[in-house]
Image 1 (cartoon, rainbow over the protein chains, first blue to last red):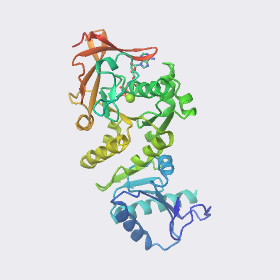
Image 2: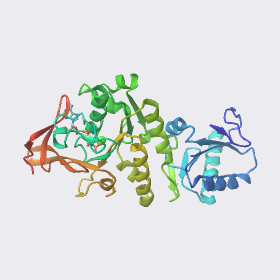
Image 3: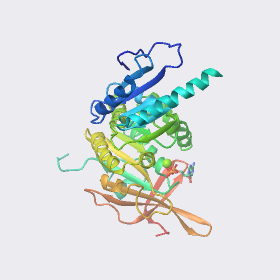
Image 4: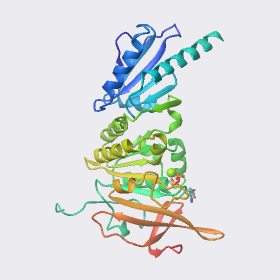
Length: 109
Length: 248
Ligand SMILES: Nc1ncnc2c1ncn2[C@@H]1O[C@H](COP(=O)(O)OP(=O)(O)OP(=O)(O)O)[C@@H](O)[C@H]1O
Ligand SMILES: [Mg+2]
């Protein structure tokens, strides 16, 4: 798995308000660069420590995609929820907020 | 063999080769269509099993509908031990059965995606074991999973072309919905494939059904145009080339 700027996949982050995002792309996928742009623009406002972004390039790491069961690209996974294709920023926001709320609830219990 | 002679891939289904001039044309895409329970999955796995055991051709099974465990268990009933093939490097099973997806919910799909991930996953295994046979069981699942038909059409075309480009023979299964008279949920599978085999399990009386098989098309081949009897025996699927199905 590639490391994205400002994130470290292998870190055991103790702060469980950090949202995990996985972005699946490939070398040949024509829609992937735009989807990555939308993703990065959307999460940028939250500050660098709000997310744990990992990028899976399926061309280089097909095993990871197989492991996740992801084969349509681009796919963005936030928490347990995924979206395929170039998403609207609003959709990503909803997914992020949903994930944050779920985490808060989980940590309060 | 001359350049113009078609190299035939033995199907591993007793009796079927005789209906199609000796086997499927090597490197072609063959569609096995049929309603639920007609034997598509058994046929597809038998094609891989005997391909490996009798003809020394490694295979890749891409399973989208049933978990590998269930398939292995079912095939063992026919004395086809898929696990031993996996251990010998003659079979790779690509498990894309939905429940293993890490993302439990896919909230949406924008009509801007491709199946390059699926291709990379499959080709990784094809290259690793030098697969000569590939099965995707079943294509229909993708039609339920994704709404964008135009994309799927185009992506299927690319996918099948890329899998077969280096000589692998591809067998796709497609489920014909119960009330449907066509060949599948896409209506395009048949067009994609250079060969179409249809499996039936028709009611012949109030109390019985009869299995049969029809080779609907096979490019470059003089194939039988009859509907032949087929049975699922303790050794798997068997076709009776001389027997015309009573239900047709
Ligand atoms: N050991 C066996 N002996 C005889 N018949 C069997 C045996 N095992 C399965 N069958 C028959 O085969 C059928 C299942 O075959 P298979 O799974 O290949 O069907 P399919 O066409 O793939 O169905 P689906 O569309 O539901 O995936 C069963 O419904 C049963 O009728
Ligand atoms: Mg099946």
